[in-house]
Length: 304
Image (cartoon, rainbow, N blue to C red; front, top):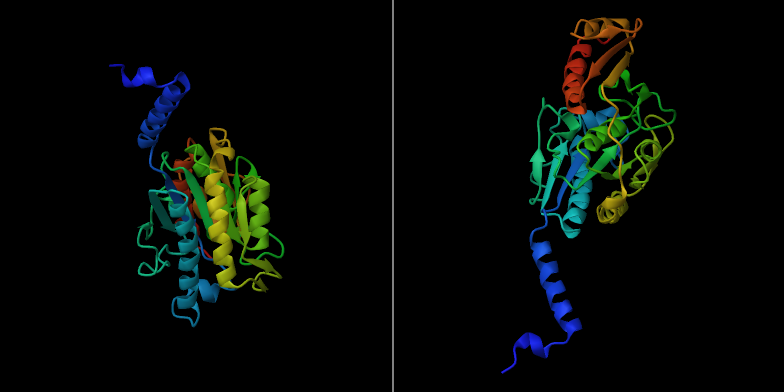
């Protein structure tokens, strides 16, 4: 009696072994992990600090709900794209804004302050893609809604180049060799991302008329666009690469008042560049984030 293999043609045998090899490889694939860092200033319909930073005001509850719904749109897309794990870092203000009861229950939520990697806490080298929700333009950007950089009292330079929170956080991801695939925010935040992060997927949530005014897009439309954009970004993640910062990494803060710069200059390994500016050198972006948390706290002691 002839064997099974002798009755199969050579092409059929090759097909069978290819299918077996494919299924074995597929079963051994690393689970897809997605990281979402969520700010609030760039969320649809957010227009001023009272709405997004003062819990007792009329619109804060609505603002945190809108923020959570935009995160859910991104998380839902990630799971549909095959993610086995989605970690969300609440990255606005005191890092306690997302509604945990409304948040997609499949997500891991990073909540509270302080934390070593700040807005990027929860990111790991085995993450496949990073998503930024509700981001904004950097300090000093003309006609951008709620534009600031971290504390809102400084301009931050990374290796001599002014950076936004999005650019800074993308450098953290690049150091771990994880691609940023998506960012949402007002039109100026998106312009900054495309210029400094790269050709990632983006969604414009509103078009700025000034610091506290803009032309809004309906939240429902924005959430749908975020879902579709994140889906595209994750699918094309292999095409997106950003080189890690050249080391040692230089961090320079220019503060809005002299006392802030003086207080920060008391920290070890600082160089007072001028009356308003202080420079540090660090070995990694992770070290830089820890330093950032301390600098923010020290500088907040003076608000002249």
